Structures are given as C-alpha cells and as structure tokens.
Length: 228
Image (tube, rainbow, N blue to C red; front, side, top):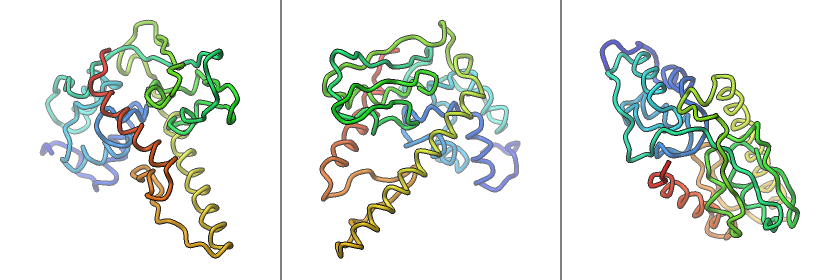
C-alpha cells in the first residue's frame, strides 16, 4: 500500500474502500462479493482495477483514497459499460426458482412453478441469474441511458444494494439455523455449513445447493469473458 494511504486498521480501511465500490455483488472482480474485494485491496492482496461496474471513475476514487496511481481497468475482469437490468420472459419461465436463489440482492420474486418477476429498481445488473436459467428466458436491457461505470450507478443505489445484500445474508443465516434446529429436533446431525459472504453454498449431501454453486462458478467464469 502507498505510504500516503490512510493509516487505519485493515477492517476500517476495507470499510472505506467498500463504500466506494458499486455493491453490485457481481463477482466479476474475482471475489465473492464487494466486501471481500475491498478487504483484498486493503490487505494488498488485489489491485484496485478489477471492478468493471465501477469503471474508470471508481478506480479514480479508490486511487484518491489510497494515495495510489490510477490504473486502467484490467480487461481480464471485463469492460466498463452501461448498467443493465434483467427481465424474465413470461411465456418461457417454468418457475424453477434457480434465478431467485442466484440473485444476491433478492431482486427476483416468485414461487415454485409460478412465473418469476424482476424488481427492476432493485436489480444491480450482476447477471448471475443468466447462466442458471434452464430455459434461457432472462434477457438484458440498458437501464442507464448509455452512462457507464459509477455514472450509471449512484451512491444511493449502491447503499441500497449493500443493505439488500446484507439482508439476504442474514435471511440465509436464519434459514440455515432453522434447518439445523429442525434436524437436531429429529435427531439428525446437520451437515457442516458456513454462512456468510464467503460461504460455500454446496455440501456433499445437498445436490441442489451443489448445482447452484456450480452454476454461480460458471457465471463468474463467463463474466470474465463477457463482451460488453
């Protein structure tokens, strides 16, 4: 880290870095969420130019905070582009719920075997729902009128997305706890799981979670090669 970077504890510095990230939770940076990438930057484990949704302006803001030189966005992680949101084609959706489970901010609603819908105002454009859809019925549309990077995603939107992501993580933690308590009540030991942003969603005895985790891994690989 540069000698002019803020002399702060790593956790505090990571928090300040995270506040400058767009909070799309898209994983294009190579980390499981925006907070994990912020922690990697704060600990010198990652450079500041791996966030396509933040774009050049996001890099400029991070460089100013850290006292580091600005770098061009690393094309290995994608290109800066307009913010896009997804919508679901009603006639094709079979209600499998895989997109609901893939969405990091709970922006998709629906029920099993019922048509799902996207809450457009909540969609961060992460595109993690695209590769898990077995019917290929999720499409993209431009939601920023051509504006790119941080110009396409306001601080208020980033704050709202961060709160939705935190809410989802808390809900998943509660669901896992209730599931374990249910198994304990039946006398069945729960499978070991880890809840949180860095959680591994797959367990050896849960094929559905394993399938979702594999699909998300494919999404991260596709994100790196995605044309903008």
